Image (cartoon, rainbow, N blue to C red; front, side):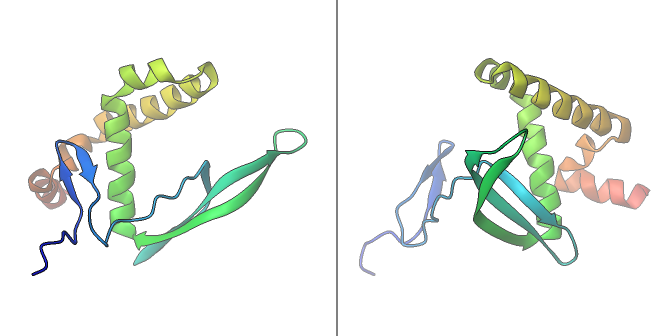
Length: 134
């Protein structure tokens, strides 16, 4: 052992990037395409290069992500769950147009979750019970 650190860890909710396995950070303004399938799904992220005429914009692909489809679904659910739990604080930082967009998305998500009881199935132990009930 050399005594060097070859891994990343999370400490007190902060990433500590120390090792050779640290991931590169790639910024994206949005995503342009989703190819949803089994066993993997693909998402093409982009950055906006310049506004164009009307409501259009010139985009440059910045990252092409391929991940397990179940993981993609879980990730989407977790992002929306955390956004809903942080909604009050999040709204303070958004401009009016973004606030309206986020409010609608989170209201739709919240409504769907409580109608279907999805939030209960978010934890692994409850998910197994929910699957058995179906």
